[in-house]
Image (cartoon, rainbow, N blue to C red; front, side, top):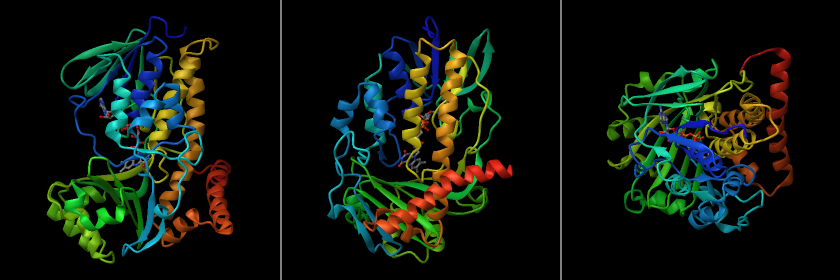
Length: 415
Ligand SMILES: Cc1cc2nc3c(=O)[nH]c(=O)nc-3n(C[C@H](O)[C@H](O)[C@H](O)COP(=O)(O)OP(=O)(O)OC[C@H]3O[C@@H](n4cnc5c(N)ncnc54)[C@H](O)[C@@H]3O)c2cc1C
């Protein structure tokens, strides 16, 4: 076997890294996950995630974890309401049936980030994850790597997999490619105990999701199983807006004042998002890795998930791509017919980067229209029962995913 007697170090215990650890461990491979969080009880922020049949759910199925997922996902949490900036409802999935059959392409079950992490952690052998291991850098060590941590510790491994997310420390050891500015800044927030602290939005949310559009701005609200909700507002800005805005995002009064000014055309109900003093806000300037990126395969290191192909979250594909990367990489690394580890990594990377070109194109297409004047209408067309409207949208999408790469390739423009 390609990995006989090899130590594998996965850097980052997010959905991508933990899925890979599980998939390798069930094949008997020696794997450790180094995660910067202090321990497993750290509360994971962020809204719920919908897993897709051919990617996130396919990885869980291969990992033998579909039953555990079925026990923990939030039935009905995928139900979406599309509203305008005054919170007027234009489309409501709560009034119709959504697909709930596992295996159906249209089934998009939602799970909170915490329970998803729990399922993956519980599936691993004790001590697979080494907590409080914030990686600073790597140093070559024979044919492998020495991994240096912020706390002064170090470890060695034959093969390193960078699964350490958007601002990966491992990426520069694999490629010179850098994320490209996507033109949008997102402010992510969590509202605790929303029934009490944001009652009007809580009612509108109905334990599901809200997509709101107006004035070239977007808001996504996502219920959580613990009574909180997560949300993200986004708008077009320049790349350094967060740094230059002078806003202290830990000072909730300053964030509310900014929202009132910048979203002054939006109805007063949305101010509930920013009015709770216990809410937490994270500004997230949005970047995308170059859509046509490639890099040479190494024999002892590669990337997966956001570390490989960070992109804005406007296609809902990030976690699904990270888990599918883990599945594909595990398949190639354990394929007896491949010549060596470098060939396995090369085969994985070609598939993963190809897939990213398509998904990244769709993501950037969505990022653009969701922050344009027709956002609400486009979203309604997408959900519409009107075949002509749906087809128009699909053609636009197809033009974006098929022609743009072609045009760019032909014209030689970079992304
Ligand atoms: C506001 C928002 C909403 C989103 N909504 C969706 C959605 O609806 N659907 C969807 O599919 N995707 C969504 N995404 C994207 C999704 O969260 C990511 O694509 C996904 O989490 C990527 O998984 P990953 O395992 O590659 O990286 P991550 O989830 O980022 O995990 C990386 C892990 O590495 C650890 N780490 C980082 N640096 C170090 C270091 N130096 N040393 C050690 N450990 C380190 C981190 O603590 C973390 O545990 C959203 C993202 C945001 C910001």
